[in-house]
Length: 471
Image (cartoon, rainbow, N blue to C red; front, side, top):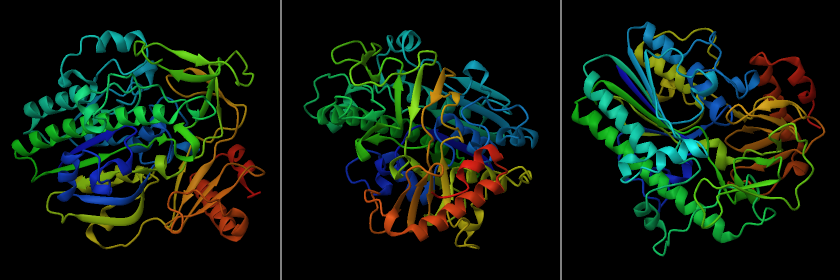
């Protein structure tokens, strides 16, 4: 069996029609979902972009030891196992972090193509200044390269990995998609997300709405680009022997919980606002007032950044030749994709793999593989210097919470002595009402599940010690 794995960065689960969104334009993914297995409770594990890809390539929960860093050459990867089994393996990505600075996420592939330009500043301008048509944009370019590769290798036994950063910011979609969501759109430039409380940072509701409109436009652009690749797979008569997976690494906040972005961050100059209205898309501006003093020897600092459903819950669609389409409600985690692919092609998963194959859920031999799932920032500690986002040194100002998700409850916990959040997912699906103080026994039970999970992963005691008690 061949395998096509498509990753779209920052693609919110609730922004796909097949997950119940009545107004988003995602016709190609919705049509794909009609013949696929739709996982309704899929969650990220390691967060954000680079840690999630480490999980995907290794089948491990890498937040417990790796963090945002290059993929170690000692790791056994999905691509490497497929290559060793005789598959022609090819990756194409415009996601900026997979190869730059020696990050090595092409490890194991027999060939890899990086589409440059997905960044901020001159390198992006150098690429985008020549854009004329939709086909020039990043996601369409990346998916087109995958399509063209298939035209040359459709008779081979192949593993094709496609990784596009869209709809990640900076949002720069074709105007015709923006107008689908805002008929009065007048070429306003979307502001860069603040990565902070948007009201405190001085933004308006209109700023959020305009940015969201651009995001939705990129969702629809990605949908069409993915649709073209799916059409090519069908036209090459590959649907009978090719598994196709579409997923994202995490979501994004557009004002939910007061946040705009994926976390809370301040640069050495204060709140980062991004492109100013009326300026070129690469222009940066900063808000200096109200910013706390930040040590100037780092590029900025990360503050407590809670992980709610808007970022933890991800779309996961799997087309499998010969399998009935349908929906699976069981809890699953992104690292489970790696051993699932190995199962589908008949390769034994190495002992080092920590995740579980989804095939038992697919064939109905089991009803569940997880009682809970964990989504977490890497196990950093407050004060630690880290390299998150393009290998620039930053500091973890505050400890980051991990989220333990069960069907009935969600627990957000960082270390003993810091804020604990507990939400009743059935009564409060938007996770707005913290009921920890009324349900300490449930929180204690879930904390025990988290601690046991971390211990099973072999997490270093330096990270376990501050997490051994709930409060």
